[in-house]
Image 1 (cartoon, rainbow, N blue to C red):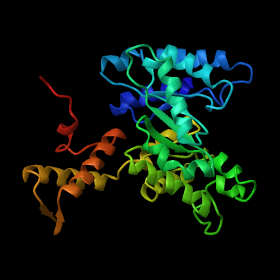
Image 2: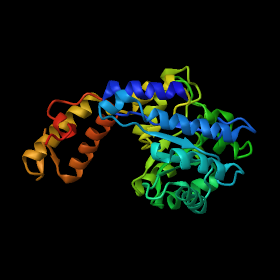
Image 3: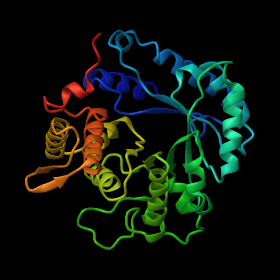
Length: 319
């Protein structure tokens, strides 16, 4: 956790923006019997990390969340009271795993709000969907106003099928393998990923893709991130090791050519006062303007270099 927080601070300074979240883990990361001490440590880490003087001096903010136990776990309420009660102001979100239904979301939100200090801003909720039944309810879950992001829990999803899905579906096949049913080619897994991404985009939420366990294989990681982003509509992706982060951020960022085109079209549209225009023989109007503006936003959020004509859009206002 400390290594991830250090890397987040370094990359935030390097890129001038927080290009990835750090989710401190109170679920799988907590030793049995030591959950309360672990939650206290996690809360202290979150508070200390937001006090980094070098980032504060440069006006840079960072995104830190905490994953607590599932709502039906005996430790859930204690996790929320400890983490949100003491470090709520330092958090960008709370993550709850194994969410099965809208009722689970409502229970999590109620616990969060009860633990927050009076008058504090409402904390967004990130949920982890890990079963076929939960995937079936993805649209209901995404519709809840406090849900900010939905993540797909690949390992639990596969194991919840009682052996009906092979273990290969938890991995990523090699570039020269055209037959193995991996996580991008097994129909049931692919369907779940698409349902979650579709639900998120239907309600303006962030779909977060699952992990790649082959953390030493950067080529496989890059292929996975590009496929998740370009083909499946995911705008975030989990890492399980700090060494994966740069590869994921780079793979999910817009390409240089797309960024240059987006800057050119947005600038031309602004000069035309957002009326329809022709660029290289192609018609563009407000629908495509919105798309290309989103390309520039993603470029900025992932620390990509922006063309000079686009830089003023993201410069701090000077009074």
